[in-house]
Each structure stands twice: as C-alpha cells, then as structure tokens.
Image (cartoon, rainbow, N blue to C red; front, side):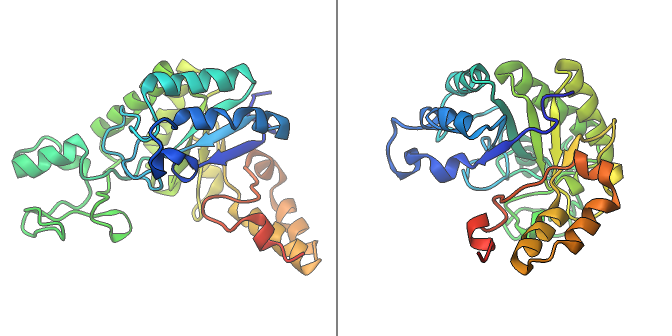
Length: 283
C-alpha cells in the first residue's frame, strides 16, 4: 500500500499566508514551518504546496522552473522545510501548472529576440509571425485563457517535454519532494503525463501525481502509466448537495457508478477554487 492511499492532504497557498508579502522580510518559509505541528495534530499525511516558482505568489505561470521565488525563501530554506515535514511524517507535494509559462521564461525571451530563427518556435502554440501580440511582440501566440502574460506551451513537442521532465527530476533530487499536483492537467499532453510518471517513479517509487480534471475520460488519466489520482469534482459537488438537501440518494448513485475509480480519486472538502466548506454548507 502506497503512502498516498487514504492519505489526508492539507493544501497551502504560501502567498496567501506569508507575512513577508506585507513587508516583514524576516518571515517566509520559516512561517510555514510553524504550521507543521498543527497539521500533524490534525492527522494530515501530506501538504499540497504552491505555487512556489511563479513571480506572482497567488497565481501560476513560471519564468524559471529552477528558481524558488524570493518571497518564499532560499533553496536551502525550502529544503529545510521539506526535511522538517518529513521528520514529522508529512509528505510534500508541489502544486504546479505545466500547460503554460510566463513571458520571462527563457525560451519565450529567445523567441522575442530571434523571431522565426529561434530554436524554440515549436515550444509554443499557434505562433504567427504575420501578426503582433497584444503585448507588442512581433508575433502572436496562443495564451492561457486569453491572458497574454501566460503563453501556452506546445506539450506535443518532445524536446519541451524532456526539458520539463528534467525540471521535475531536479526538484526530486534537490528538495526530496514527494509528488506533484498538476493544475489544469486536462490540458497536459498524455505523452508528457506518461514520461512524468515513468521518470519520477524511477527516482522515487511512490512519487505521487495528482491531477485536476473537469472534462474527459477519467480512466485515461488514472492508470498505471499516467496519474495516480484526480480531484473528484463531481463527488465534491454531490457531497455538498446531499448535505444541503438532506438527500443522499444521488450521492450514493455517483459513488456506485465506478467504485474502484472513486477509491483512487481525491475527495476534497474545499480547494483554492471553491468557497470554504463552512460557507457552502447551509447548516
């Protein structure tokens, strides 16, 4: 039985809790360490932490996959946090988004400098050098949710997939993390998911990959070659509805549809994308 089977996770957005954002430069990752005894008392087995590589501490979009952001602390401090968590029997899972980057990413900057001569043209979706971008670039590109500050990756590109897998291998080697939560995993190429599963498990046999998927075939995402689990959006909605309406029939039907798959999925009471459970439940 793997450590994540039946595990209880607590998700933390560092940018939402660190006082360093309000001007106290002496408080960063050390402040998160103070949560560890509390989480241990709660019975948590793991922390989902992130984003930690983006410039904006409350949003995804990475410019440098090797750079722990200064608002969080140094690499040494982050490594110490993971060690302290492990000392209490708590695993650390990083929350990351691979479908896009931000405009400071080295490959995008090379594209800005060299245009069609850049070797990274195929790393991005729908490049068009006959049009300019909303940000004034000499080319247009597809962006995440039409936000031009977040260029979309072309995850069908094998070279890009290899590069991103190397970053994950570095995180495992440098920080000894225990898994990843893949934000917007439905937009992550299936070949990339397979590469991620294979190489991460080679470095750490029980490395945990948790997806976030709203559409698509679930069994294609959860299997021995791709992800171990997905956040169960449908069951979360059914659970809230069942308690509010005092009717558990529909919830039982949803659970009964595919019990084995349901056991592999992550049930959550709240997430950064939902209201707090105390607000959702009417009584």
